[in-house]
Length: 252
Image (tube, rainbow, N blue to C red; front, side, top):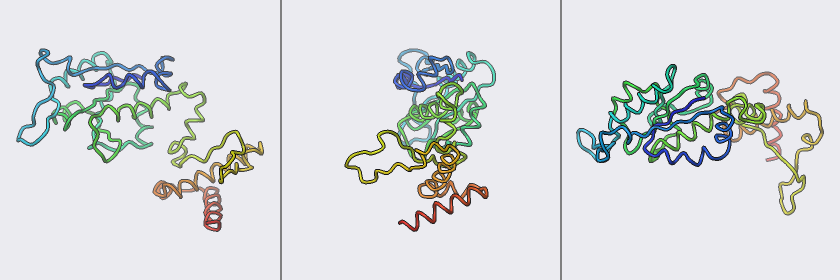
């Protein structure tokens, strides 16, 4: 995957490319990240990349010309089939179906806005999609871009030690939340809720798989019922879910 980032503050990305899965994917040459700063595309060091908006009102936006030149330069280097995404609170919210769709592109440009946004003509003429991470305002598009990259990188074959780990993550897990997980030691002193489900210690992988599915259905019902309402359950899933629900309500 090849990602070009257009940002006034490319230094913000230094941390994520030095650590974790993003660093690992770059080191294994599964991910290539380039940076383009609109400040490098102004006439001289005294020229500004931002300007007050027409019609008055508070705040400034990023000017069109430096952004257009940044996009053009990035596209020229990346050549064909480039997806251009603007990180914006007005964009479509990132969800799992969108991420799966985005994985079909191996070249993309992420444009990070600042201040009150960018000149609308850039959006109308150069942006393929506007994308949001939620209904709130941040200081710029850099943090959303980092989040989007981190989500995508987990799905690149060869980044995770096992792809089954990513496939069972919440949301990627057939639209459900992940099941609970436990590890050593089996007993933790002075902790009240101290029980590791015996099925996980049984070695019966068929039963463990069934238990995890039941727990995924149950956790989704308890924490994100909106996801469960969207899902059409199979006969087996209905049985497991009803079993979880009845047990939960009985012990509540």
